[in-house]
Every structure is written in structure tokens, then in C-alpha cells.
Length: 608
Image (cartoon, rainbow, N blue to C red; front, side):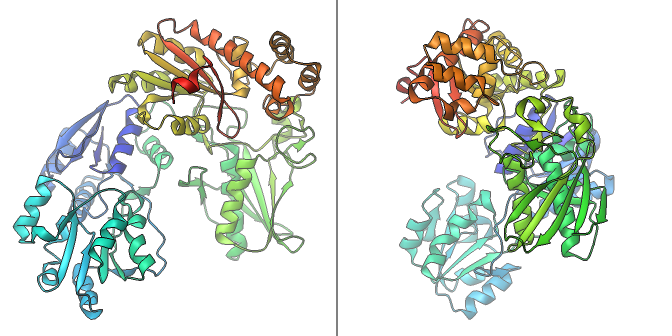
């Protein structure tokens, strides 16, 4: 069993991730003010002393604690640290993102230090954004100097202000987006805040003062217990839970070849910058912005630089590259001043257009290139760098993929759009679809937006900003199973977001669009073009296609409309058979994330 300490934005994220497992867990908060929807979690309210926490952990057989409480809940962090250390229970800290300390803000380790610095300034009119719980420690200052405190508009906050003896005429209530208006009203000599991070709106709080040249003082966040394992995003949390509670998630995630290559690149670059030092884990930045660490197994010196090896781990999606060695050699060069990617052994060569890569160059896709370049420039901002990716088994593995049909020869490609592998080829993934749908229905959703994965989901969330995130369900490649599940739940309204590569397969009637099961059928595309009344030029383009997405740019405007309307209608026809009691809309998304074609065609008018 897992115990979460929440009450924050981070707590909501943690509970949503754990709900995906379908397993029970506990969610503890000091009060009951935070509204949170728990599908499989049980809410526990009330402050926990050492004794209460120890007894609860023993009684409920807690095997993992996740601390997602406020960063300034110092007493709680200390209690969790001491109790879990005594009971040998691991703790994962789900940490929020913090702004880089640039020196623009005056740091204070304590409220006493902050008071001393305010007195020395001197400050006669203070705007405090530190919250109601800081009234007592800051009382020696505000009793002598005019001060305004912004607090939450809640009864318990007003009670604390009254108990502290603070004048209500100088209370202001938090309103999101009103930082500038509040600053303009108060016109303070100084502003004080906590190091509250991104979800605490830290940047927004201090922006008006910095722009006006008014000093900003910040209480730095307290240190966490030494045995805490810190993660900063959903992927890191999921991997930590999979490792510390192996039976909690029935489905294990993995990392793409692109992420693995980036980890090897980071390790080789580190050695180049630190006299050959080997690191056994390398930090990378996923396309989402989350930072995670991947293991690195080997490092060696080369004639030009250093080469590191990381092993691809696919989780419960054991594709042909599972456990494959991926190597990256990093070398500095004066031949250019950018980041250049070179082909190593086992990495394919691009021979056909349509992949968005230079013909004759290495088959390393755009997202992995960006990930590696980001890591390089973080640690080596200026100067020429050559990155040579090699995959010793790549030539052999290529024969087991469809890469030759795409014009990728002599090896495999380095791919990945999210950096993470979700197991799209197992019964466990289908079970996860069922859980996603169950969660949405349990929360009262009457509209579900199904999508293939992280990329299309990002686009669709922008198109449906008012829907809760539980309304978005990823189908991966299992369109048929997803629709059948939604039909059994009697979902009134279903939007199916789909990109062209999967759409041309679904339109033909393929309900499982995995590339291992079905590939683009040019004969079918000719049938579609004929039925849609496209010109001979469209048929010529189809004959030379490498990937379906080339149709977006290759077709004339008239042929594009005819062809895409036909594809979208055919997708609707295939899907609607499985959800006869639901209203289904198909949304065809282009490579830039735009919903370009729909069926029914009046979607845009109906959703204005």
C-alpha cells in the first residue's frame, strides 16, 4: 500500500498517476479544504504526529510514502523523515519546479534574517506574499512598520490573522492574475515571498517588483531529509513507484531509443568536460521539460573524444530494440560551431524524402536531436560538437523492422516523440485503457476525447480547454478495444483525435494500427483518391510515398480537401459501428497540431 501526503497541486498529480494502476492507496491532508477527486484512493484528514503516523503505516502495511506536501511544511517533512527512517520505509518526494537563483532576489534562510535585512534597507511599507502562517514569525516587523499581507480567502486564514492581532484593513486576498494590480495599489518599499516554485506562481509574484526596481526578499525552502528520493515529474514518479513497489503498476513503462541515446551523449559529454570522469547515471530532459535520470553502463576514450553506452529499456513493450546497446561518441571540433550528428555503426542512412531528415544523413529523428542538443548546450553553450550515435546490433535489428520500406538502410533509426515508451503492444496496455475510461466515468464525464498518445493529446487538450484531464484517454494503437470499452460504458459523446498515419489504416478498417500488424497500403490510398475524385497528380504522388504524412504537403489544395474528407469519413464509418449508441466525431490532426478535417463536417460550427 502507498501513502501520499498531499494538499497541493503536486498531490493532485500524484493521485492521478496512482489512479492509473487501479490499486488502492491513501491520500493524507492536514485539513479538508482541498477538493480532490480520488478514484481508487482513500482520503485521510487530520495532522499526523509521530505516533499517529507510525501506527498508521504499520496498521495499513504502507510500503512506500510519497511526500507531495507544500515545500514549506517543514514540520511534516521532518516527521515523515524520522518515522520512515525508523521503520525503513522508502520516501519519494514529488518536487515542484523552482526558478533558477539568479541573484535578482535577496535570499533569506530564516524570518529573523529577513527582518534584519528589511530593517537595514530600511523598509517602511511592506507587501508580504508569504501567507497567513508567516504573520507570527514576522510580527516583530509588522508591529513597527506598515505592512500588507496577502492571504487565502478562507475562514481558517481569517481566524489565524485575528489570532495574530493583524489589522484586517491591511489584509488582501489572493486572486490569481492580480499581482500587478496589488503591487500598484500598495506601492511597497519591499516585497517578501517564499521560494514557492512554479506551481506557487513564484515568477508571477515577483515580476511587478523586479520591473519597478523594488527589492524582493525570499525565504529559501527548507532542506528535506537525506533519505528522500526526489522526482520532478510524472515519468520520474512512475519509474520510482515501479522500482520501489514492483506490483503496484501492472504495466511497466520504458524509454525510447532517443532518450537512451541522449543519456549516452550526456555521459560522454560529462567525461569530455571532466577529465574522463565516468557517471553511472545521466540526467536528460524529456520533451515535456521533465528531467529524469537513465543508467549508463560503459565509457571509453576514443581518438576524438569519449564514447558512452546506455542500454535501451522498453518496459512492457519489448520491441526489437529492447535491451539493445546504444552508444554515443562526443567530440569537440573547430570544423563548425553547431551540433552535428554523424552516422555510426548500426544507425540507418536516410535515402528517401518524407522523413523530415537530410537524405544521406543518419536516421536520427528531430525530437532525439533536439534532446541531445539541449543537453549539450546546457553544459557546453558555445562551440562545435560532433555526436556519433552507433548501435552495434542495429544492422541485424533493421531486418526485423519496416525501416527498409521507409528508405532507411544499413541500420535502425533513433526515434521517440515523448522520450517515453508506453507499452502499446500488450494486453496490459489494453487493461490500462479500460482503467483510464473507468476513471473518467467515475468522475462523471459525459464526453471522452480519445487519442493515440502524448503528442496528439497535447493538441486536443488545447482544443478542449474546458474538459478535465480525466476526459482524455489514450488508445495507443488499440482503437477497436477503446471504442468497445466506451460503448459498454454508454459514453454519450466521443471525440476521436487521430493523425494521418493511423487514419489511413483505420479508414481501411484496421482497428489495431500498430506497425507490426499493418502498414500503409498504397493500393487502398489509390482507392480513396479515386472515390474522392482526386486528379492523376494525386495518384502519382501516392506511388512515390514513403510516409502518409507526405500527403499534407504533396497534394494540391483541391485534392487535399477531397482526399482528407474521404479519409475522415471512412474513419468515422469504421469507428461508429463499434459505438452505435454514442455520438462520435473524428478529428484529423495535421503535423502542426491543427484539427484540419472532421466528420461530421459541421464540427467547427457546432463547437464555436
